[in-house]
Structure formats: structure tokens, C-alpha cells
Amino acid sequence: MVLDAMGGDHGPAEAVAGAVEARRAHGVPVILVGAEAQLSRELWRHGAESEIAVVHALHAVPMSERGAAAAALAGSSLAVGCDLVRQGVGGSFVSAGSTGAVVTCAVRGLGRAAGVLRPALAVALPSLRGGATVLVDAGATADPSSAMMAQFAQLGAGYARSVLGRADPAVGLLSIGSEPGKGNRLTCQAEELLAALPLRFAGNVEGHDVLSGRVDVIVTDGFTGNVVLKNVEGCVRTVLAMVAREGVAAPEQLAGVARRYDPETHGGAALLGLRGTVVVAHGSSRAATIARACVVAHTLSGAAPDIKAPAP
Amino acid sequence: MVLDAMGGDHGPAEAVAGAVEARRAHGVPVILVGAEAQLSRELWRHGAESEIAVVHALHAVPMSERGAAAAALAGSSLAVGCDLVRQGVGGSFVSAGSTGAVVTCAVRGLGRAAGVLRPALAVALPSLRGGATVLVDAGATADPSSAMMAQFAQLGAGYARSVLGRADPAVGLLSIGSEPGKGNRLTCQAEELLAALPLRFAGNVEGHDVLSGRVDVIVTDGFTGNVVLKNVEGCVRTVLAMVAREGVAAPEQLAGVARRYDPETHGGAALLGLRGTVVVAHGSSRAATIARACVVAHTLSGAAPDIKAPAP
Image (cartoon, rainbow over the protein chains, first blue to last red):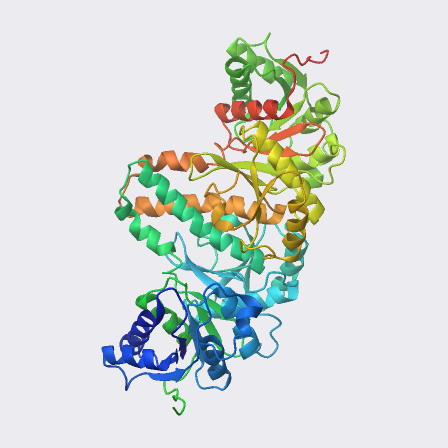
């Protein structure tokens, strides 16, 4: 798999440390993309020059850069990384760059998988029952059609099977009532399409089911999904802060729950439906999170472990 | 104000106790609608027969009944209550019936206020900073136009002024990026309209701002708003359950925070934009919550305290 070593808030040192961990602890083959001299120096510090290949890229896409502006930055580590995946050098791509920039670059650079109308972002959220629920689309396609949402359901079910190990995942459609026919126009149309798919459709679910663990996959449009994802993060912060403020528990005692919903921890968002899997790690990711994102990307791509590094 | 004494899970006893509390503790004039003999008996137990008028209604709308089916139940306490408000007997209406049924009955029975395109449901959610943020629309209009959303902003700002006492409330538009122009088509159109309104528009806000207290009012469509409202309730439950499970704090120590976000506590949802204010209390409301909903409805309607009871 290919790792953008220039994305994220903490720079190449954390990315390289993450790559080394993915390689050594999980056997994931990694190709780093970025400023070659700097990356080689970091690899040397880990004694990993012979284990991990480096492909040079002129510059990083700034974290503030988004959408079209970012995609226009040819020669960036994002563009070069996507290009390597397109060429079949690596089966998947990980970046801790800004989600908007990664999504735009990946869609342009990789193109959509055969038959896929639009990509979707999948995020696995820890649930009350102990497992995780895949929220899809968490923000790649803000205005999907119902047909696109039916594909999101299939992409999300695939993610639940390969990453979460659910043989026959239950898929719910996020709406405003559990009865059939409740929702806005888009959701009502999507409901009919989902019911006809060859997957275990559990019908409509509601906002309180996002963390309840009632289903394995929750399908929604990218606008609602992104609002919900950020709402979960905000709610967890607020509730824990209120508990701490009441003096019931010290903040450090609440760190376990906080960490479970820290966007840095939940493994990153997977951009599904492209010719090559892309995982967007959070901008604040440290080495361990980068390593986890590499493992998820590698699992999703099903890439054989003998990926060849390109000629230097 | 007019109170549907038959709505809700706990029946007339709690409704009557709430009416008595609203009357005695807050000076709110109340007219009860429901099974007359039963209500008179409950009033007699409180010694309040001379303080609170009763208007008979044949039957209650079952909690399971929704939408058109509920509205068709002429002679129900919901229909009679709305009719009293329409006739100007009471300036506002409170019911703990099912939200769908109350909204449908109220829209049909009261009609929209002059110039209002569609009603919106407003809910005040406690925020991290100690105050509350008004989420509007929390579920009345699932497919609004951008023009309707601009009206939701004005209705929500009015609520923040009269119920929360904010002289010049800051209004944010819920979207998937704080920069201008981020969002789905509907939100981008609404953003332009909101920016042109004579209110303090704070621009786009995101999912994590729902409880952060960054703005006083958050405007969204009724689909997204309802998903977010239920997501907040679900997140609070999940996070507190996880904290309790980790053994950091006992469930009873967490009850304070739980109560703050219990749908039974946050005062009910106000249906704005009709000819007469309607407050939907949660189905599980007990007397104190009913009383609070009566006070909110009375405040919103600005009704004079000398509402006349209709001739028996």
C-alpha cells in the first residue's frame, strides 16, 4: 500500500513511524510518498531503509487546501500517491491530509470502480454493544441520488464484511421514523431500492441507532452522514466534559471513553467505490493511528503482500 | 392556554397535576381538554375545580396513531384542543401525544400564520457553555425549500428571544464545513437567503456545534434536524452507559447529565409558524414536564393571562 508521508498535522516523522509499525507489527508492505531526503533520514532513524520504499514528491498539499485547488497541485504527495495506486503499484492509499483534498484528488486520480456512480466515505463507530457500526456515506457525496445510496449500502456491507468480519451484516437506512415510508423524498426512494438488494436490509433506523449497535451498517447521504459523524464527536466531548465538571469523575478517568470516539482513534474513514481503496486518517494522527489506517487500507484492498516498489 | 389531557403515556392524572402546577406555581391559565368526568375527578383531588376549566372531548388519539390517520379522528382531544385555539379561546396548545399526530392535527386545525410557508419544530438543547441552543427544524418539515429554511431561522430567532431571553441571538446554518459555500444544494441556497435576513447570521456551523454553544440557534431541514436530535439523545445514553460500565461512576451519579438531555426534560418541542403556538411534550412526560411545557407555550404565545374559558 501507498502512504502519503506529508499529510497530517505532525509531518513525516509520525507517518514514517506509522509505516514502520504497519510493516513490522502487521506485515503490511508500505511505499512512502514525499520529500525523499527527509523520509530517508526518518527511515534511517528506524533502521528501516531496506524495508520500506520511498517515492519522491515535490510538495505536500497544505492542510488548509481543499477541493479543486488541492487537486490542481500536480506533483504533490497526494497526486503522486494516487497515481501509484492507479498504475497498480500499490492496491491502496492512506493519507492524513484534509478529507476534502484527499477525496477530490482520489476521485480524479483513481477514477471510480466499474459501475460505481459515486464514492462514499465509511467510518466505523464504536457501539454500545461493544462492536462497531459502519456509517456510510460520512461525507464524500453531499447530494446523492437514491441509486447512489443503494450502492453505498453495498459498499458499506462489503466494508463490514472485510474489516469488521461480519459474515452477513444487517444494513439500516437512516431516517426519521422506523416505519416503512417515513423520511424525506430521497430516503423514501432509497428505501425501495435497498429493500430490493441482495443484502440483509433491516429497514429504517433513527438517529439514536447510530451508536446503539442495532445494525452493522447505517446508510445515509453524505450531508446527513457528515453532520451525524461530527455530532457524535461533539456529543461525546460535551457529555464527558459535563460529567467531569460535576466532579463525578476526573478527566483522566474518562479518557478511555473519550479515546474510543476520538476521530484520531476510530481508524480513519475509508473512501469506497474507487479503483483502489483510499483511507483518510485524521489530520491529528500519530504513528499508531497511521499504522492502523494502513492495516485497514491493506485489508480492504485485499492486496497481495508482495507489492513491488517502483524503480527508484 | 389549552392542554390536551389525554395525550402521553401516563394519562390524565399526570396532565391534570401538570396543569395545576402551571396554574398555581407560574400563574398560567389552563383549559383542559379530554374525558370530562375523569378530568373533573382529577381536578377535585387537587381541589382545583374552580381554577381550571374543562372542555369535553370524546376520545384520545392513540400514541401509535400518526399523520393523516390521527388527524382524521374528529372529536379527539387533539382536534378539539386545536379548534379551541383556532377560535381564539386559548393562545397556545400543549399535548404529550405522538409528535406526528400533533403536528398533523395542528397544521390542519390551526393553519399557518400569515406569510409562513411551513411550520418548524424548535427544541432547546443544553449546551456545554451552560445555556441552550435552539435546533430548528427538528422534524416538522422533512423536505423544505431554502425559502422555508430562511423562515425557520426567523422563527427560531423569535423563540430564542422570547423563551431563552437572548436579545440578539446568533443564528448558524447546519452544514458540513464552516466555510461559506460548503454543503449540499439546499444548504448552499439557504446560506444566501440567511445572509440577507435582518438577523445576526453567524454562517455555517457543523455537527459538533450542536452542543458546543457556539450559536444560539441552529437552522436545518426537518430531516437532518430530527436525525440530529435523536442522535444527541442516543449519544448521551451511550456515553453515560460506557462511563458507568467502566466503573468510573455509578449510574445514579450520572443522572444529572442524563436528565439534562432526557427528552422528558428539555421542555418539549415547540411547533412554530402556526396561528397559535403548539408545544409537543414528550410522550413519557410527568406532571413537572407538562407544567414546563405549559409555561413555554404560554410565553411563546404572549397570551394575556385572562383567557376566558368557553361556556360549558
